[in-house]
Image 1 (cartoon, rainbow, N blue to C red):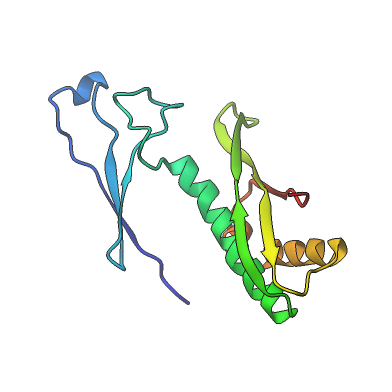
Image 2 (cartoon, helix red, strand yellow):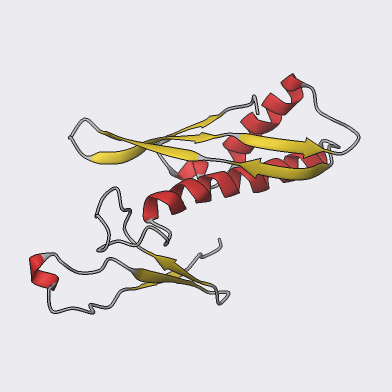
Length: 153
């Protein structure tokens, strides 16, 4: 099976680590050479200790689910004979407390807007494609969060 690697690097830039007043900014680096500026969510740790311009883990989690669903959907649509011209999704993750009182991302809602070529799937065909994409997406199958797809977009 495949291995997927990410290197996460954080360096303390202040003597205030033990007081909790340290920057949460860090870098995610991937084997292809891409580096992404990252930080904690400003909803979790307020600026300036977090950087809202950087990607936070919760956003990345939502993006990975959306991206995997999209890639799987594109493949399935092509195999079914539907040419996809554009796929846009404004995915949203929601947090809640679990039975232990811990905060987790409990629901991720995908809201894809898809533009097709000449052949457009019926509502039932599109629903079936989304259902299959969810079943076959590696990421969706790896998480316990509920993943919803808003099909009216």
